[in-house]
Amino acid sequence: MVYPKSFEYINSIYSVSESVYKNAVEKKDNRLIAISAVITNYFNKIVKNSEFEIKDLQKSDHINLVPFFEYVSLNNIEFYDFKNIKIEDVNVTKESDLERFVLSHIYYLTQN
Image (cartoon, rainbow, N blue to C red; front, side, top):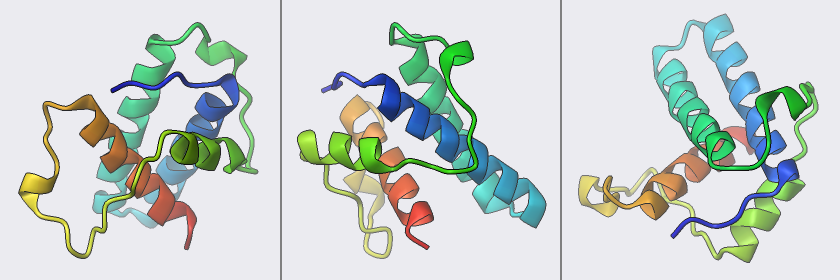
């Protein structure tokens, strides 16, 4: 199921995607670059399916995660445990599983 996304939520995801990409390039970390691509693809998809435009978003080094956590809480999204995840845990044909996968990465990356 796809849940409605606020401007603030989309802006939060935008800030995360920019930060993760910048960090990945600086560290020359191929794994992080791949995760960054997944987050960026998710971001592009939610912007495309929204009434907002990329030009309306505000770049910031400060990432406001409040809208992220509100969205997760409101929609009862449980993060994947990447230490115990199995390939069959993520159904790539289900949009909700893919979203949960991306949001789990965002959560773990922003909590370090």
